[in-house]
Length: 75
Image (cartoon, rainbow, N blue to C red):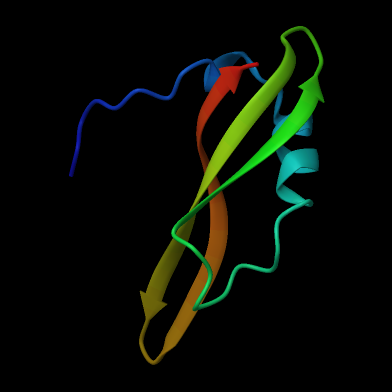
């Protein structure tokens, strides 16, 4: 597990903006690219590109997929 990674200005982007950006992504499921980026106009920081990583949790015989925001950068 990597303890430190560069997440850009992700901490400055409001949760509402990250949620709105995630709705532009396709459904999280197997076969999707590992990462995808979305550009939005975020409150307080302006135009940003948010990068999401496809995450999976294995629980018994089931797998749950979701998009997790991992990086944000101003444009």
